[in-house]
Length: 234
Image 1 (cartoon, rainbow, N blue to C red):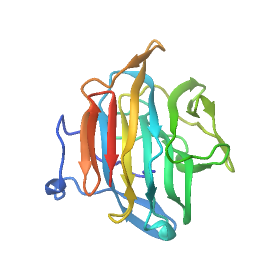
Image 2: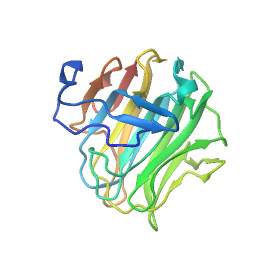
Image 3: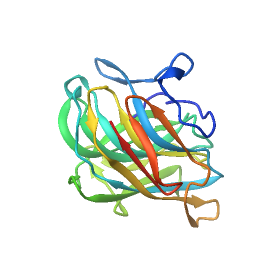
Image 4: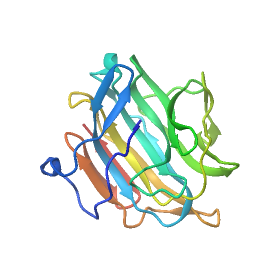
């Protein structure tokens, strides 16, 4: 659930805390909170595309800073509106421990569009269960909309369906993995598997070829199967 750009694409390497003076952690703004973030993700500066897919394993975790609006989440992010992995515009879906001051485990979706700006939204039509998998797609569906689907169904919640409006084609980047707003939060052996992308012709392709691992400690990440399956922990 990032409100500002998370980090810039810097090439195929694992970045460490020694880079902090150059690549300062972004902050995520919730009412009454300014929260620094850590990441352990697969990061791909992709060819022109219409969407991304990851099968997310719901791992055991906890958000130590939930009361102040903090969270730790496992997510797929897809750039939109001609953006790349600098993420000026994007749509995302995943699960989170901690949500806007609630100590809960929940699915959610969020986006930042050129028309409406940033918003994050609770999903209540389905509930994550630790030890299970949830396939999540973020894809262009036309009419300014990118859909975020859970087990191939649009989710619903208090704010309505998981449809990110106010966007345009195309995407040039995507990420999958862990995001945290506190160094003392935990998420153990989260997995984003079966990474796929939808090409400019609308055909799903397997693998995020040339994607690299980005780490902002104390989060960690590594390939289980390169370009196909990434595991993250904190």
